[in-house]
Length: 322
Ligand SMILES: Nc1nc2c(ncn2[C@@H]2O[C@H](COP(=O)(O)OP(=O)(O)OP(=O)(O)O)[C@@H](O)[C@H]2O)c(=O)[nH]1
Image 1 (cartoon, rainbow, N blue to C red):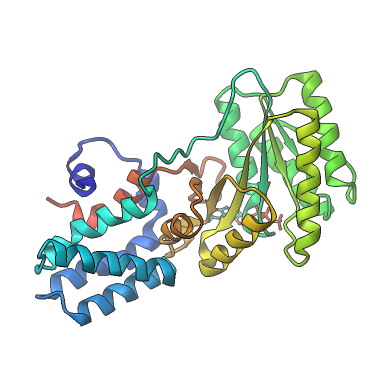
Image 2: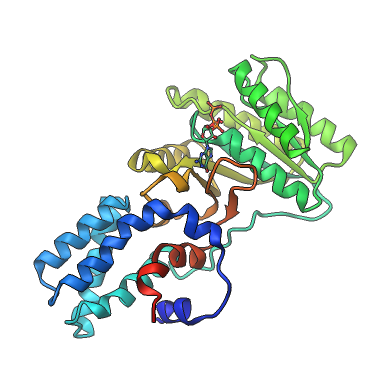
């Protein structure tokens, strides 16, 4: 329904970070242009190659099959025989898979003059600490009073690493000794927030999936403490996923959705990944919105997700030259 035309005709300034950060995914999707240019007809071979490119971009098998099936149906319906026309269909369909006829809001749920609590969940090593630091930095620049809370008490190293990021972001930090009960950490942090009127609490959590029941209990207990101390204060539970892990990341989304009420995704390391299609797979399979994407290791390398910027960043070099 004209997403393609709007995207490439609109004369708005695009965010260069997207295009730069998505360079690896762009290389894979650049093959689409070659495929389209080299094929005279839309036969079986064309679709097999198209499938292959989508799989390489890590859309995931289910989403790829759905995507290809939809394209085939629409082409039949509209009597499309020229591969050139399919560029537009691919871009439009990407928008549709992401939007699912909804208004998808990337901005964090935030209420003025209240303490807004965000729980950050995800397995170790995906970039949780870094993302909390980057987010704290952005919120502080946005004039919010931010408290970073070390809710992953399992490793002393994790607490220290988070402290370093909080310092870097120039926001306050709250931790108890390693081994403390995470729900007692959040309880004490909430008492501090009540006295000192924080706008935002960013709380790290443990990410050990080896014991799903323990993790579920731990996160449940933290939620109950929040519910009791600051009813409705918990605005979001954000799951951090490392884009370079592709299908593994999708599996993590599935498991975390089972153990807690995830409201959105922070997708890290997009700059080092050719698997940009994971954005669509996460929406298609789990209906979760992407809130932020990580496009580098520096403190300002986290950007609010924008599906237009994202698709433009992926395709402008190939499809935008009209
Ligand atoms: N290129 C790139 N690297 C990132 C991004 N986000 C995080 N990283 C790197 O990923 C590595 C792991 O990040 P951490 O934030 O320590 O991950 P974590 O999930 O907190 O890991 P644990 O502390 O082990 O639980 C670090 O080297 C980060 O610099 C990103 O968006 N892009």
